[in-house]
Amino acid sequence: MSEHPHPGSGQQYGWQPPQPAGQQPTVQHTAQQPSVPPSGQPSPPPTYPGYGGFPTPPATQPERTSGRGGRLRIGLVGLVAGALIGGGAGAGVATLVDGSGTSSSSSAPAQSVTIENPERATTATAAAAKAAPSVVTVYVASGSGAGSGSGVVLTADGYVLTNNHVVAEGGDGGSVQVRTADGALYDAEIVGTDPSFDLAVLRLEGADDLVPATFADSDDLQIGDVAVAIGAPLGLSNTVTDGIISATNRAVATGSTQDEATVLDALQTDAAINPGNSGGALVDGAGEVIGINTAIATVASGLPGGQSQSGNIGVGFAIPGNTAQRVAQEIIETGKATRAFLGVSARTASDDENSEVGTGARIETVEPGSAAQDAGLQQGDVVTAVGDRPVTTSTELTAAVRSLAPGETVELTVRRGSDSRTVDVTLGETS
Image 1 (tube, rainbow, N blue to C red):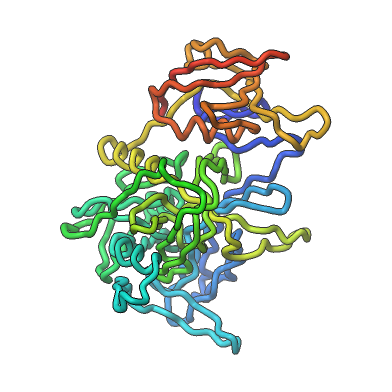
Image 2: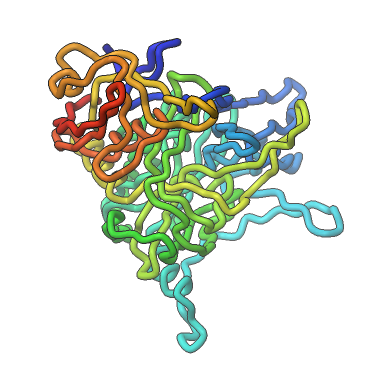
């Protein structure tokens, strides 16, 4: 049995979209690639969940329009991949509109952040000065369009971490370039990707003196800790925003189909994250990386065919730094990454009185020879906790399992009928 979900039977851990109790949400990961008409005139800009469309590039520049994102409707809220921003004309150019309604283009070179006045420096100032030289802008072009995102330098000799959805089209006959904080532009190759974690590793050609990022232990994070996001929202390189860690261990999912679903055990932050930030760094007050920015939430319009509210609304998500480091190292060493495997498909169990309230993850099937079968799990069991972490939905079970490494032993709390018990499970491995 593969890691892909079983249509109609629930989810296979871990690789699957959420299935909350009651009415299932619409899960969408769009990829709109408008073509350029033969006349050379640019096509109408595509819509982008969480952004609302791309600006039209100047007529004198080649069109670069692309968008990749995901939306998970939960009531009036959707989750979108916050990253690949298209519509700039040429590399690193974003078309902006001022208050008078006129357009202007910005193509300023990347600039490193330095502390010029220590007396007035804030925590964000110091964090940006430390981390900004290790954050890059990633440009992707293919036959159907182009766009940009962000990335984080891993090694001085050119390994860079970003999101899979930022570079997905660059691996299909396209090209990838990376501009570092000092303005240098490099051609890059894709070393490997892992769509389930939404991570990818690039290698910059000819790089030998980059500034590697320093990673903190993301397991030590507390709600309320300082969080500073650095990246290229809307193509604007080296943009710095700050906020706090709003939540840890937040189970979120993006993807338009079950096969494309990405379930993340994410950090939630209110630091402003917008399209183009994806793949960039979320750092702590010391400027050390605690997460890789990957998704944002949007508010649906509520009108049929209407656009969701564009841009940041203070609910962004990042892949924890510990997970990102482990996956990146495996990709560098082997070209792919592994993940923990429980070996069940499940769906959300609902409360008898309110079908919208999840009470756990009900197991639908158990794969023969899997970790779940070895631990004695059965169809109909309801998992209510992984370790000391409560589980109320199938997505939360996916995220909890995915947060662990293959081979780890974890205690599951399982409800069988009217009885509740704990079971030790040594997780398997899948790639």
